[in-house]
Image 1 (cartoon, one colour):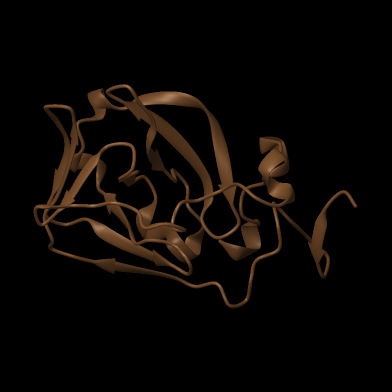
Image 2 (image 1 turned 180 degrees about the vertical axis):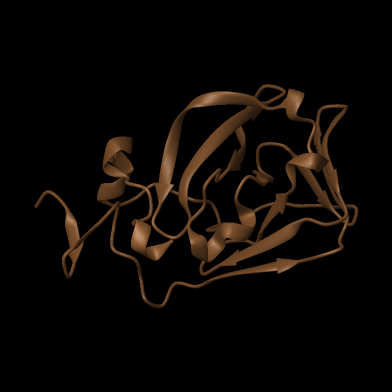
Length: 160
């Protein structure tokens, strides 16, 4: 088998789960991200993305991020729910942040925003250090882990 299809459309990565849900909410909570002594991001208006089976992820507008602290790394990953993610190293922490530059329409609110990995870099929400609970880390699985980027097409035009 070379690819997944739903009706006549090729599905990039793996087929989506009909019971998988993503909700995005605005918040006025105070989020601070530090790389060592440097404040990498500080926001009073991040958005939180709740995704079935995962820890909440906090996305920060780029205007609230010290972009000079982000060092783009090679390689992207594909999520059938959000699209292509680009990664950044911060202060020696590998892949400590990511961004969906052109997220799918369903999650467009996080397009261009930056999220931070609390197990790689210090993330505080209202002064409380965030940490992932066991089982909340993202682990590559399934046939999409070796997906070539040319095989991850942009969202079909008729869905935009």
